[in-house]
Image 1: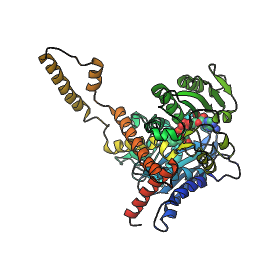
Image 2: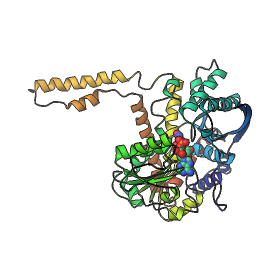
Image 3: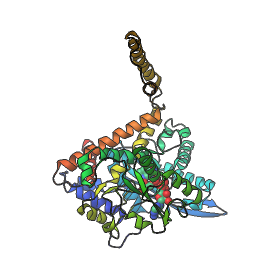
Length: 478
Ligand code: NAD
């Protein structure tokens, strides 16, 4: 729950308004629009855990937005402000996100109202296991019905506890590990899941910059190299996105905004060094190599080429949308732009790469992890050496021809080493993610450019997603 001006809709209403804008341009059978929009069910649980000599009561939610495909999928968030409205909004976004990137899931989301920084690790384990127990009991965590993943405030550690809790309660379920994704590698996880959402943001931007007409709409030109980027939130998603964009694409991260203010340096910040400082000192204040300001909001509206809100919802709203200077915003967080702010930015021509696409890297790699768990084998295990052997054949033949022709040319050793190496799981995961992000962008783009009545990527993304969900419902006879 973000504190918004009173004239702004809630997060869930914002998602619904964006949905409504898209369905108004579609021709759905009567009544189906309402069926897709509404959240099917939200389970609220209050449970007690004995901590520090007394019983503490916690409130958690698991919301199932749409079961047009099962299992349903969506992260579990730990934050002090979690409420039903937020969880339902996030669950709805999961439905549209999964449809857009063709991950065969319905939409769900969970949340626990807790400030995780106030608890010791062993306390968090007790709380997580108890929350998981409540959800497992009702099949709200289940490999074929409802598969959570990490979100704000949770990560591999919590997912490992959840997987273990499910396994203890379902000792004969051979697919137990598929009950949750985002697990550590040694507990059934997949290579590349931790970086996946930030990596997806990078792949989304790379695809955007492959289309000069799209880049021109954001009043930009050229590629990612040298682009000035401001990131809000240096957590899982923001950190990986900022790191990859600066290290691999030559972008310049000029601003980083966190809870305790922001760092700004027009020459570019060292993302790794800032993250390291943040982990050691609990915030950005007093970071020695850049200017720190307590007013993070001011940096959100600083001049830059690409703004990446990667913290929480509602941060660009009616109070500051007019001041945002970036012409390209990529929503790494869920719902960072309210419906009202979206109207303002669209009317000004700002290009927004929407959340349902931009942060879908997480669920995409979660999908790969779930498939890996169900198939009980690591990706690439069967093919890797066979692929290497076939490449060796080609290299041997080229070298034989070279000898026969009098040793006139040589294969570059660096090329040879790269060509001979078979793909491991991480490479396969990245390749699958890249393909997913490119394909999804192209499906949105086709509608964005192909229809006069669609002027933004968000509406285009919703149209693609809603069309797919409606086809699933029709196939089910609804
Ligand atoms: P996280 O908890 O790892 O990181 C969030 C970061 O934002 C933290 O560093 C926190 O200090 C910072 N933050 C919190 N409030 C802030 C504020 N008011 N101003 C500036 N910074 C603030 O969470 P995450 O997993 O990176 O998730 C971030 C966003 O991305 C959320 O909207 C989440 O729903 C979305 N998302 C996450 C994933 C995933 O795989 N983790 C997938 C899809 C979408």
